[in-house]
Length: 210
Image (cartoon, rainbow, N blue to C red; front, side, top):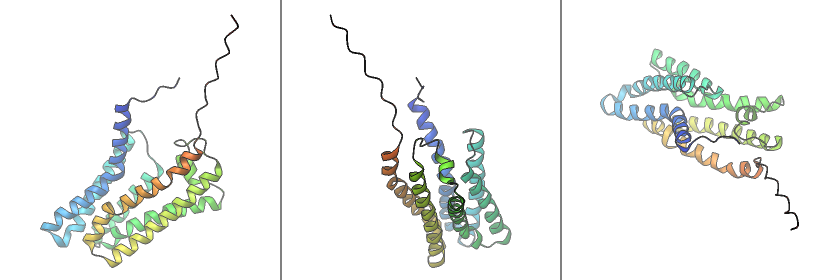
């Protein structure tokens, strides 16, 4: 019989993952709003510095504590450091504003490029979490998420080009995160429908006649 992780461990793991996924973005938003009150002209640069440090901390936590370095986290960390570094070095907020566009476009390109060469990147990343899903369902999920990343890239371009910097900085947390959660939940039915079900125990033998 396989041993299940105790509820405390499961909650701790989920909390740690939430910290890795949302911590840097939350700190970016908080540091931007705080510094905006005292140094409006340089708020984006203060927030970018905090964002870079928080991303490095999240990467270190995932690698050293969780003992895992997901490819998507590696890509995110590299892009954040490169575009954050350009923002700080050139004192040009354009680069950090382009970061979400670049990351989401890279994710979409990886998914659709993989499908073009008959390699399902989405399945390779998440098959251990959802065993038993047929290839047809993995393809559907890959296409859905690929299109969703395209949508996020376009959405970021619309937001930073047409709204204030303050709106964009807060939308990264209060807009993109709820949209992503809603989209993930919308895909739950297909996962539940095709998820591999545990084998039922054999029926007990009939009792011998007395």
